[in-house]
Image 1 (spheres, helix red, strand yellow):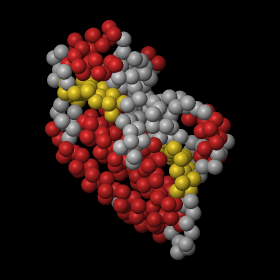
Image 2 (cartoon, rainbow, N blue to C red):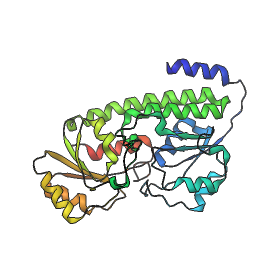
Image 3 (cartoon, helix red, strand yellow):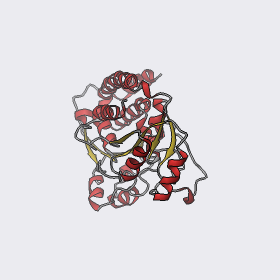
Image 4 (tube, rainbow, N blue to C red):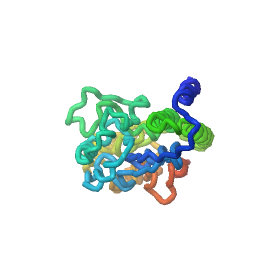
Length: 297
């Protein structure tokens, strides 16, 4: 079906001209920027707003970010309300009508996948939750095909002369991704059916892909750091569980998860949560390779 749709786009939009237009694309996070670069190659110039060292929920909305958006042809965001706390004021300051929500130059990647665990009736008492669902969908590699296809579609829409180019880039990317994904699955197969504890709800989709069960979050509610008494209660609650690892994102304080892992005498691992978070995670493929290396038994 997708090939038929692509054929229609190519027939409608691709010309025999030699135009090699460059689209100015801004991405909110590193993994998004690399995905756009993988598909767009030399036909795009990509700028990433958030540094990989940041908590993606809390990026400082500096005026310099608005400057980066002013001449953008396309803005690609994670969505699922992950950028809700910092992107809206930056967008207003940018005063770029081309990339406002619901415009042709705006792409919300969360609209291309099914978000897990939606909470439409959540309140502030539930902590920093996302009513539309878990926005950390990128940690499920099965979602990447739809995300890449959506990016290629949007680039084709804005750069009609490049439709054939984007189709070919998409095909190459997807072929490599599917091959790499098989290797990752094979290496992590021993984790299937195992239990884990995570600091924040960042890795629900990763656990689902691995066939693992998240038995607890270290945070009492999302966005609230654990107290010493909470950790003691959590340790007692986990006494009868067969947890094999405790994991967290690289930008968080490590004391609580490290303590919990030591008390349970299980593997403790800090995972890079974005492309560029470590020297090894230079692009989407090396990022997932590093995730697999750190998770592997």
